[in-house]
Amino acid sequence: MKGWMGKVLNVDLGSGAVTTTPLDMDMATQFIGGRGLGARLLWDLVGPEVEPFSPDNVLIFAAGPLTATGYQTSNRFSVSTKSPLTGTVLDANSGGWWGMHFKRAGYDAMIVRGRAEKPVYIEIKEDGVTIHDASHLWGRTVSETSEALGQDKNKRSVLCIGPAGENRVLFAAIMNDATRAAARGGPGAVMGSKNLKAIVVEGKTRVEMDDKERFRFVQYESTKMLKANPVTSQAFPEFGTSVVMNIINAIGALPTRNFQQSYFEHADDISGETITEDILIKNTACWACPIACTRLTKTSKGEGEGPEYESAWSFGAACGIHDLEAITNTNYICNDLGMDTISAGSTIACAMELTERGLLDSDLRFGRADLLEQTVEDIGYRRGLGDELAEGSARLAAKYGAPELSMSVKKLEMPAYDPRGMQGQGLLFATSNRGGCHMRGNMLGSEVLGLPKLIDRLQVQGKAGYVILHQHSAAVLDSIVACKFANIAIAEEYFARALTALTGVSYPTGDLIKAGERIWNLERLYNLREGFTRDDDNLPPRLLNEPATGGSEGQVSHLGPMLEEYYRARGWDANGVPKRAKLEDLGLAELALEVV
Image 1 (cartoon, one colour):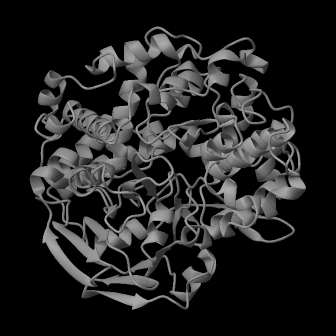
Image 2 (tube, rainbow, N blue to C red):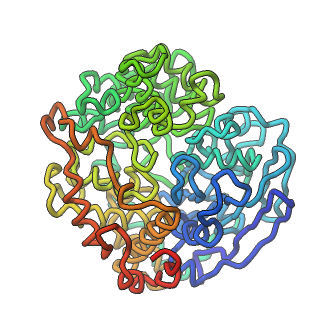
Image 3 (spheres, one colour):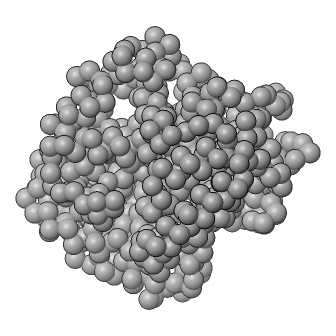
């Protein structure tokens, strides 16, 4: 078969052994690659007896069939592990150039096991794999490490952790190409626990295609759709992801001051329009991406990338702060230390509310822009109060007697969409297999932007079907692996056609979406095996009981009836456990014998 490279790299840091095994092609055709392949491998390798920081936990780096083919946004890769923040199945994916170089080095996936006795880094070239001493790199920031190891996006790509990963901050990110991040859920902390500082790749091998002419035609058609869509051709290139800041705020769905309000009176100060006007140098793009949503910016203190929408929100509205320079500098620091900006900002917001309620003795208050940079540094180095914040908002809030003040699901902090103003988004957060996450099937397009069509954002009945479809589509995109932004303009049919032309395996659109359903149900089984139950498919009490403000004034999340409808539509029982018939239809019944 074409499209896949046919090899899995195995690295045991404990013994130093490096081996290569053939890719299981039956597994690959069922689970595709990226997130799906990672979840399937993780099922076999990491059971409930394995703690996230145990040497027996693994890091699985996986490309997808589309990776490195030149298809739009085919630069991405996925990292799978057991999350130290949530305890759930975890994958986080990233763009840039590293995924492309890894695939062209000749591999579909790499499984990293064990723990090195001292800091090391892995160097992957087409002619071999070497493990090097990295003691001289330990303690260095992401930018310093990337430079020291020869980061050159066109020739040599560096993936690494910063001090946050070394110090096992529970939401530490894995960074690549200096500024790209596989961030959510703490994969960087797992990498740090293995004393693995970096992975450097160089690769030039081209991906073989079954029908190159047909593949290039589908690519050509996809390019036309990206150029014709106003979001991917104009809004994102001109204003970046923060173009939605004022839109979300206007409908009353911008979480403000730790979700106490859903409207931020200073939203325009941190919007995409203001970023473009005040601090933008130029927009840039990942490899093979015509969208170019990344913002290269400059403040009085320096230059860097971002902030993206989620980062501008987490250090901005979530904390009651509208000082764009402070937010941007904090974003730079967060990236260089290697942390998830969503969890970092949301945890700070939680600490601010704990302080204002008299439960935490600190100087943090909503609006204290002057404390942002230092607080993020303290988290990355686990200094003072930062050591407590490094555990995430759920543990922080519980420690100070107010667990309800953590705005998280399954201990993963929710992003910048208030479920009281977007009912489907609330159901998505509650049921996401890795916790409160919008990248598992974002309802922004359907409930706000009208892509592919607009549905009533406050409607409750019938929302489950939309959420499920988006979840399956997201699982596919994370597995082939492509950027979610491409899906704004390119329908699943075209991804199916591209995958068929590339691999020679027939992937009708329906079968591709069914693969997404298979991946979703496997992840659900993994979490059930870990002890998660229906009770974990929930939202913070504030969102269920306290009315929203602004354009969604008076609204609360009506999760209960949506969740019941969701379970029925999925073929799960009333406790959220997949039924035998559903698992048999998806080819998962044999795996589920120990769970269902």
